[in-house]
Image (cartoon, rainbow, N blue to C red; front, side, top):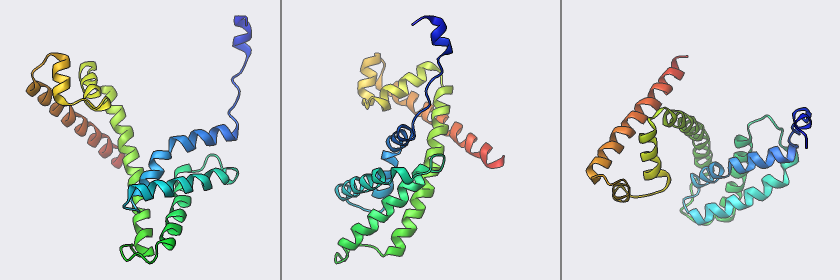
Length: 185
């Protein structure tokens, strides 16, 4: 294709289905954690999550693009948790519906706060020196132990732990500054 054609061809807008799929994929983990906050057993939480996913997909045409997908998906997930509770009603270890609703409400609020902190943390990671950012990524993103990172870098393990401690403190201070700046604006 000639360059002139590339420049005049506008990118095609995403279809509502494509946008929905992106949102659905983006919020899978958060919806699961929302369910897990209400159901103590991870296996049962996963089953409820799968049921909620089926309902979310079946109602995709009812979701209004531009609104809060996470809140919408959590309403569906909460309904699935309540259905699960109804099936398991005879189990004396289950909490009251009012308590579950309160936990669900708190979980939604905390999820938003945690997402905000995650975004601030990502911004703060971007401000680190490259060497510090790489050390954090080697230790946490790849799941390596401090000892493995020390061996990989040829540094004493105490040096690695001291560096990680300094970087974590720096990140915490950066996130807290951003939170306080946001709170005053």
